[in-house]
Image (cartoon, rainbow, N blue to C red; front, side, top):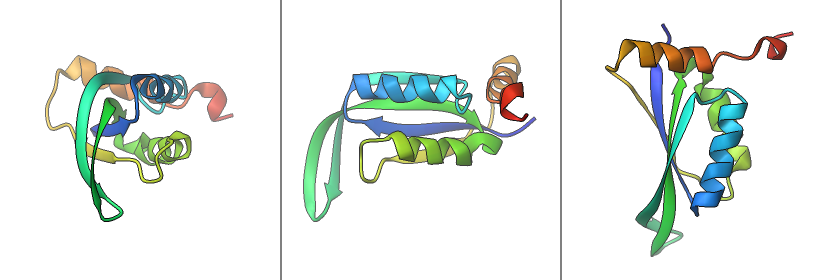
Length: 112
């Protein structure tokens, strides 16, 4: 089975996060996306420290689909430099990990 990845990405608000999540799941680039509202982010950008409200996306995908997910997320995202960080899942319920892999396979019509 392909390596499962957990991808972290922040969005400016829950509505934007939901739109991103829906598109990525519909396009089979992510099997599931959790949207966590109420995040506060502190970061340095262009020489200044900022503090903003954001929403967090937790995306589940495979290593094989990661590059396509990253490219699509970057194209859709409103930020100039979105946070997109992937970490490998070292363990998990086997049936769930198999489900993630199955849900991120390209649809048969995509490969025609």
